[in-house]
Amino acid sequence: MIVQQTLTHLRALKLDGMAHAFEEQLMLPTTASLSFEDRLAMLVEREAAHRDSNRLARLLAKAKLKYGQACLEDLDTRATRALDTPLLATLAHGEWVERAQTVLIVGPSGVGKTWLACALAQKACRLGKSALYARVPRLLEELRTARGEGTHKRRLIALAKLDVLILDDWALQPLEAYGREDLLEIIDDRAERRATIITAQLPIEHWHGWIGEATIADAILDRLLHHAHRLTLKGESLRRTAKQPKARSDKASS
Image 1 (cartoon, rainbow, N blue to C red):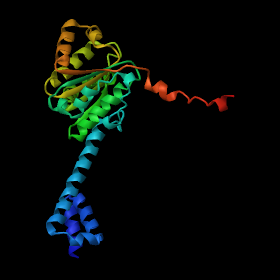
Image 2: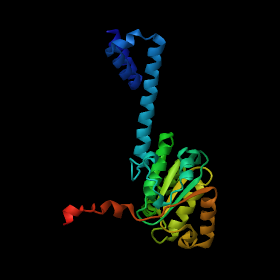
Image 3: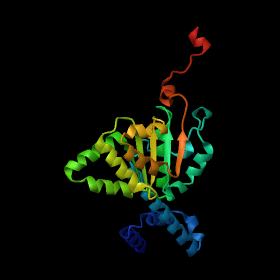
Image 4: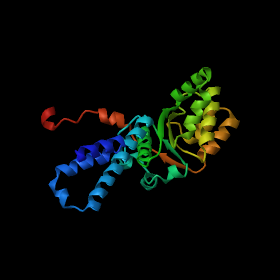
């Protein structure tokens, strides 16, 4: 009776991890030989792990990463991609998020830019930071629609509060006047306050021309390139490589 009341109280207090651990202790006779302090420590540790797991699940769900399972531990570091492994090792510690720095990932289509961006954001989530994946063309269109709905300012404020924002497919399509203004607002709100990841096929030296308006381009790039980490990926498309059929053996081809 007392045991059931204890479990009920733990769940009422939303200590589900502790409740599960308590039930396990009751089923394992070996825990009876442990001291009260040791058993309590195990319960508290289980509750902390349970909360960390739930928090990570919530952060990843809100991040809407294109590659939700991407993680730096699974990164393909083949030399053909020209990955800067020392820089990646530095980024893996997450200090760039704390310092509100920018990561620029540039390279041709299919070399893994988006996957790497998602892996960096996933690491940030594991460190307890909020993140969001967004394709620039779609984001700018959503902001244009938000102007007419009266939610534009609220949307910009929400973007500014994110610890990490992925801007995927940067410079993929021609930029309209409203897009230039919104990009400036987004980048200005985040400069030296929040971390940003940008992926693009267009080399950085051509971004000024893509933005179009010289004054706005200067303002955006000055904020972006200050304290930015640059990763330039090379090589053939990983998508094309994955689709290639395996070579047949001599026996099979004869």
